[in-house]
Length: 135
Image 1 (spheres, rainbow, N blue to C red):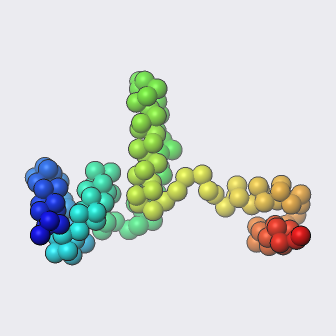
Image 2: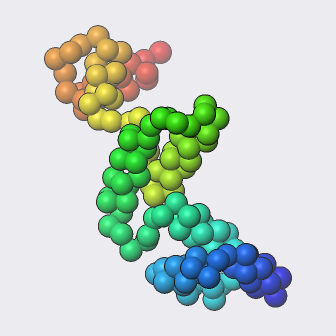
């Protein structure tokens, strides 16, 4: 009973447009029947970040990362820019992406760690793991 009440209170704080968007989500019916407030909050967060679960997931990740990389401070003060920057990182996390990990960069770092430029990423990774196991 308390979960249902908390669910309804949370939903009651949403605008009519946001409620309609939530109800249109694929997972909404099960979230509502379970009165799952945590999942409702995640769904609200995703809507606020303008991510639709019916999108092709790689497309959603790409869009979030593209928006992050095109973020520009322009007329924002420093604090506003930092807040926007952090918000963009949260959006990327929400849609299942991440920033800063790229295969090419990882390979180059591995090659520098083991001191060989003529080695593939897989072999560099294997060699590094072998070195870590050595006494």
